[in-house]
Length: 294
Image (cartoon, rainbow, N blue to C red):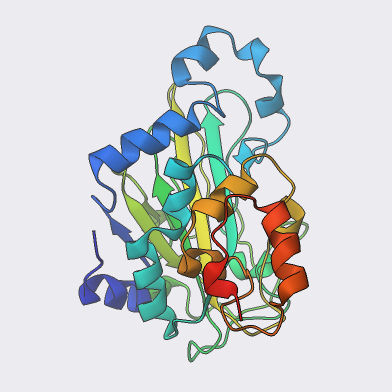
């Protein structure tokens, strides 16, 4: 589903937008098929939680970085997500600076968080108020999420614009976090069927919440974008992932544009010569390098 301008206007002024039906049912099912090769299904997990102790270490234990498998990988650079990022960020020279697959299971750990703003670990500084050099963050829900399923909750900007950036508001917690319960009466939960997309700004207060019923789970793919250029923004270094299983297959299957989002050398870049072409071909044997030849 391509986002309408009204969606982007809501993202601009409210600070976030929740879009049901962003993915088709087929896209969701294909992605979930890959996902459950990585994570236990809810039925598997709750049949014996003791068999999956890794999820009890912290609320972030259920995060996995790419690559996963094409039908899941491609959601991070889904054409309609890239289109929305280009329009919101005002550039077609984009960097996909973070991708995470996140699984949560009720009872595994405390998933509750204070309200916080993501720029704290997405940039070395603070966002500009005029939108220059901004970032776009996203959640794609890969399971149906209700109020019982630990939904992410966000605070519309109109309730938090008065709170300055770069100020620690609750001692000992995440920078720019609020005390527990503050602004709780204006929080908006991200609920919806699998395939729902959340887009939000890094200057928006939001938080993870706990499950309120047993035997519940939540799965989401997170993908974040920024215009290429600023050295003070980002999160994941893709070369650190490039030796992991599945990475080569993803790069080989991706289009020129999709590889570029990860920072792969572009067609026409001086990097490309006979020596580098031969070396890259050895590293990615199934990659068509003809477009990169000088």
